[in-house]
Image (cartoon, rainbow, N blue to C red):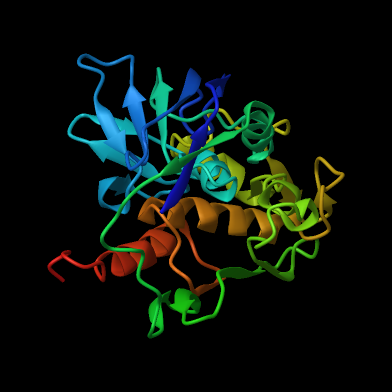
Length: 287
């Protein structure tokens, strides 16, 4: 099995969306088969937190991974960039509780990865990722996310908001089979899409101790009269960002099984529930 890691390390510093804390992230090459994992270098004994669905500890407006007393929050954009760029094995050192939001998208991460390049690795494994042979669903009221049998991996998302500037949006994206097809790449089509929020919810979220690091510089904000901080990078930037989140959350499986992942009005919680169901189908999971 062919895998990839970074050719050399990359580093970024910024503020976390929810904590407001400034942290530095160093992403270093890692051995074949080691996967993607975080290291809290600011804590005693530098605890390791695997980027696996079994390590998810919270999904309130972001995905948080945790192990005993150590945790790292808002991992989805960085993990989406790594998975979308084909980085299988990396050591992610972070000196705080939350991954920096940067510009609210995965654009800075993908540009950093592209700048340093990748190195191929060979791994001998006995059990290849299992394809999805039967539909797997998770739903809550009219929101759902599912994995459907398909000949190739595809991500499709739908959202629906009362605000006219967002309204009903759908987008579908497939990882290109031709690595030279940059127009359809994750870096071009999905990574630049920024996180977005609704103006009428901001005060409540702030009083709840969330989005302490949010600003018009790192998130799109929409109100009844439209976007407070245009222009958008895509006409349907909000739904493309939801695909970004879905890719990041499903990257906690390690590799994407061959399936059509379809979501509508879903959340990090539903994404992770689907990932857990898929994880439980793995050989030797005991489920």
